[in-house]
Image: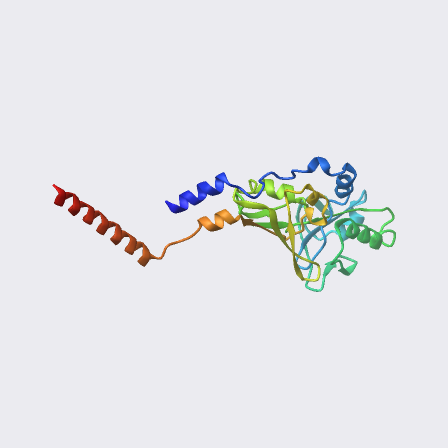
Length: 263
């Protein structure tokens, strides 16, 4: 009963604003545009699984630069079919390296998506190919962990290799009413394996211009509960509960005897 009363009191007397980006109209459009142009590049870290595809008009020439298992044709046609193949991924080792066909060991940790694509292109063309190839890099294990006072917690997978904070919140069904919008914790591991914590105020739309707005693989988001929820989550010791029950029974018995005595 007391816990229910506490919850009702919390609902009637909120101290944390539940409105996200309440000052969005005050953010200059130039600041939002600048943040948008910086979006979309993940930073490569040890343990990442990369898919790197090299494409061009001469399939035979680019074939050695793609890490795939090809199934040979059965019949009169010579060569290999590109329809039946299994893509192999590149694991970034603890030293930040990958083993790339023909090129050998490449140090890729700390690079962003587009810089790695440009780097591989420069290593291949014009040394090995007569035309500039198209190189595309994707991360296969991009995931974000959402914990705390979300309406739905869990692991979010981003197959396109990019995810921002608003997208992650939407995929979690928003924050619960008891979650603090002004104190969302972002735990991130940098390219050197060092963890750091950034606290984000979702009530202030300026978070959309922060570097942390664009999430990185293996980020952890934790929403802390407000103080009313903390107060409402309390427990009474079993012995104390038993004592209260016995006291209530005794008071009822005394009242019953008193009423009989007056008759």
